[in-house]
Image (tube, rainbow, N blue to C red):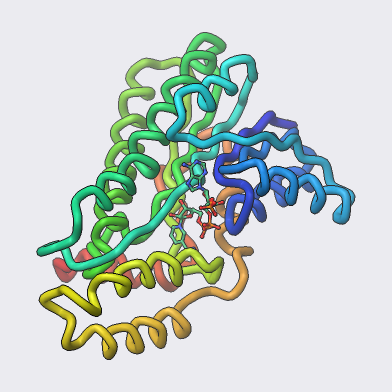
Length: 263
Ligand SMILES: NC(=O)c1ccc[n+]([C@@H]2O[C@H](COP(=O)([O-])OP(=O)(O)OC[C@H]3O[C@@H](n4cnc5c(N)ncnc54)[C@H](OP(=O)(O)O)[C@@H]3O)[C@@H](O)[C@H]2O)c1
């Protein structure tokens, strides 16, 4: 069945690739981008690819932008927009942490509440939250991000149970990507070095940390978003989605092991 699907943060990375994959399967895809420049670039890409997306600008932290979704009749909302930040928790400026939560948790939840109004009234709809495996195991020095994804995964699981109890046919699922090479991890990990090199408990080792981190991401990051896009498509099309969709599977397995051993 063809669905009307809104995806946030669709100007780049996993969001953009999912939007095109869903459109290729015949769905009506409404691709929301953070800013107007991304919207224009995405419209141009649609022409080059000869694929049809309905593109508009939506900053999920803006009340007036969020209200743009009210006239839409959506079958699926994919909450993909997100930002990252990093730094040691003992000293990170809490404003930075708050900013990450504003986007990854509060903006996402506020948009979801607006979309749920229509879905609950129509007794039909699916909400996907793009969280992270960093929301299942804490990642040292990426905790501003990791904590926000723990909160988002908890919110998704809790909302799913509440919607089940409501009995209005609202499906909720979590998408938990491992590391994918979209540039997201590089800009997130970089952010801490602008201050940790100069004034941090870890200044003396930050150069070493930086090299090690870059090596590790180069090793583990999947080069293509294909595996996680396939999971997003599966979850968006499912009549009764599972709670969690993880990719690459090897990273999902590593997270399960880490949790068993109490990391
Ligand atoms: N790549 C990974 O390894 C990985 C792993 C686990 C989870 N994830 C999650 O997957 C999702 C997509 O990430 P990605 O890797 O595809 O990175 P990405 O290309 O940076 O995608 C995130 C998108 O969200 C947009 N965005 C940021 N703030 C926003 C806001 N307030 N309102 C609307 N859009 C906003 C970004 O715009 P700007 O580019 O202008 O900031 C960007 O287009 C994120 O939720 C991320 O946390 C990624």
